[in-house]
Image (tube, rainbow, N blue to C red):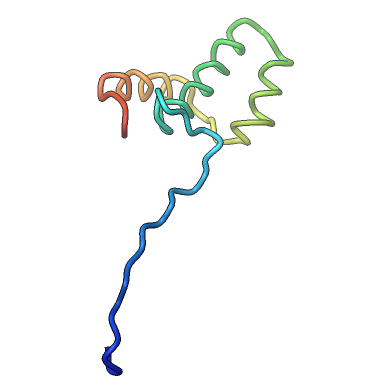
Length: 81
């Protein structure tokens, strides 16, 4: 600092996420919705699939099989990732 002042750093708060879940973690909770959509698709529940896509997924799901594999990996890793 050219004027002799001191830099004081303060903590930053984590931004809010609608997928934030204290027990499951952000990533696992988000993939949980993808897996739920896969189940709804398999059972021909068109209204529930539409609800999930419009409220949570917004066109981000392309390959449901890959997502279920990610869910399995996240469960093995545990919380906090």
